[in-house]
Amino acid sequence: MKKRKLKGYVLPTIYLMILGVMAFGITFLSKNLLNNQVKEDEHYNYTMSVFNENEEGEEQEVNEQNENKSIAIKPFTNENVKIAKEFYSKEDTEENQQKSLIFYENTYMPNTGILYESDEVFDVVASIDGIVKDIKEDEILGTHLTIESNEITTIYYTLGETKVKVGDTIKKGSIIATSGESKLITEKKQTLLFEVYKNGTLINPNTILEKAE
Image (cartoon, rainbow, N blue to C red):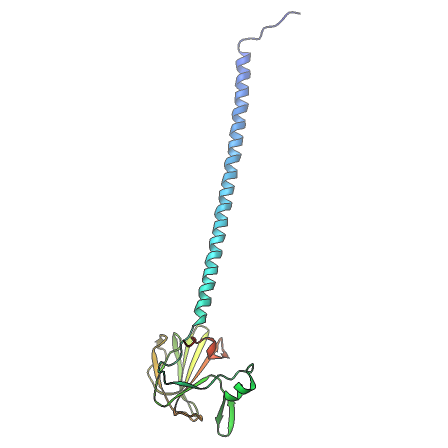
């Protein structure tokens, strides 16, 4: 059989084809690797974003909890002021409930706040930041003043002289009035009845007041 000799251009052509296939393969693999890297980076950024958001949310929740521990201060600064009657609670013991009853005109009534008393006139201060919403007169409890702050409303009864007016913005600790006399039966003449409402519901003031040191 007679052997045929390949023409001179055949081998270079084959080499070029092989090189082309290799180049295409390398380009394809590089592109896939690059896309995978981008996806991994996007996943990393998304994960870090979610982590940061959760971290900020947890930090905000902790801050809110810390703020609620001492959302309000006592409505006075005079150390001679004492508690005459505690808040009447249905969950309390029968003995404590009896101590939380207010006597007026031969009638015992549950105390709706904390009743403070003193031998001398004392300054009444705002227990929370807020706006003075109302100042009224009551036949039994005398002058009373209402301060609202978001979900919390505080009411100060049996006042003497008021130092603020309706619409004033008040800072916690600011003097708003002086104590006064009421028709409630107490051992001492100067009194202050302090009520707290949360979202319109009467609550025990001790749940938001700073603890005594």
